[in-house]
Image (cartoon, rainbow, N blue to C red; front, side):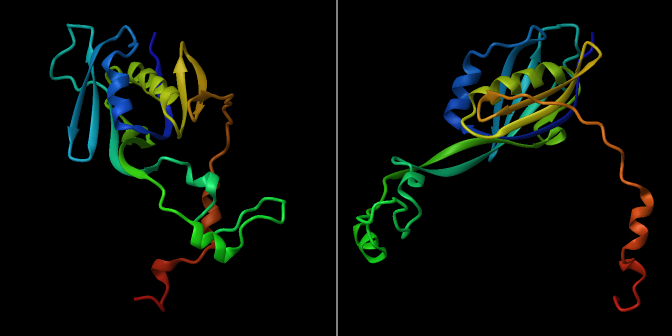
Length: 200
């Protein structure tokens, strides 16, 4: 049985601390013995260590790649309070007026938190062929604990195509649509910029 990932797009974000906590004791597919995590500047590389000892140590195994960014996290959700300077949208007439709100506005407590961002398509987020599908299964588990972001993919399992969609930590229904490639002659009606005599 050979399972493969054909299409993958990820916008997953989770606090770096939670990422490390997750990989301390993950539920790994049987093909993966353990996980190695390396941080190089603002890049986090999560590599699979194969269970199969016959696999050459020079064979690059699948790895997940995330960029590490800092986000400001507020103690109180600023969305609940509305944008700075905005009036209350309550239906009662007793809400604060524009000027009054600006005077009452207080500094919201916040801190900078590092996030691991698994963002991009397959070649960006999930690299190398050996153990690729097993590492994709690990990425699906990461998606289920991510506080925000979406993971969508098309995979082949037991020679059948499967659609995967996980949004903000929850699995959602997904389907595969087959569409035709756009006709090549559609571009004939457009402007040929390269042969335009007014552009040098």
